[in-house]
Image (cartoon, rainbow, N blue to C red; front, side, top):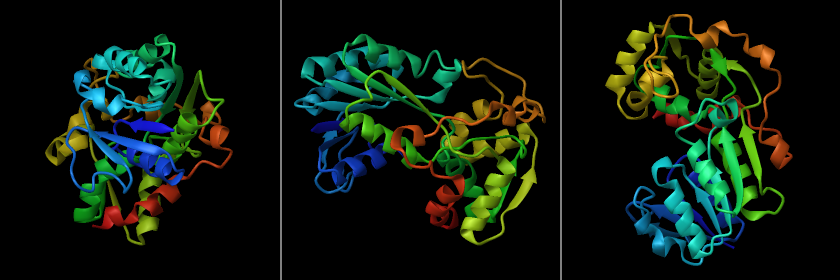
Length: 292
């Protein structure tokens, strides 16, 4: 099977590429700019940009299945080009926010474009990425062994990126997943405080947790740059999922709501048959990245 992986350099995409190679598939990795070492040996790196669908012609030629990174603005044209090229199966990297009804502008239009194509489709809807904590907390942990957090007792069910990739690979390569939308979470409800403790245990070092206001955290994230700066307003409650302005408070809705009342959350185990990876395992897998 020939499979094109878009978003191949991302946290999920690179794990999808690796697994597909290990399974012996013909894998193509889409990247905006090809460079040496951009993909594992044996993977054909294809230049292309999902925001410019006309650049995908060569990458889509002869492809059986497509792992689609979500770009809402061009989703219909990208899917149309995939169908015309002979792609028969599309697996969408979507979001658990679609399941919850919060996402109507980002991932949902991509899902709808794929469903309308008449091709086989599967949606993979992860909740909170555990990897976000490396992006948010990695710089201060590396520099000072500290996390500055406005809502230490808020929490969720962070999911390991490898669990997301496991489900995507099965949907890409096996029968029985067409028409399914898989919502994926981690197996445990964990406060931010406990997540910091688990990272510290994985590193074998002490990490100090300092409680700050949302306004102070916003300044920290903006100064940090990258993912933290790009998502500061949403993550800290200054804007809602639709991008509208909101007013954060020291006690966020997440802290006020009794998360334990939700009961067990769906995980990769329902698809893979294996227990979902814990945050403790994720922290061990990435301990070196927090030390560097």
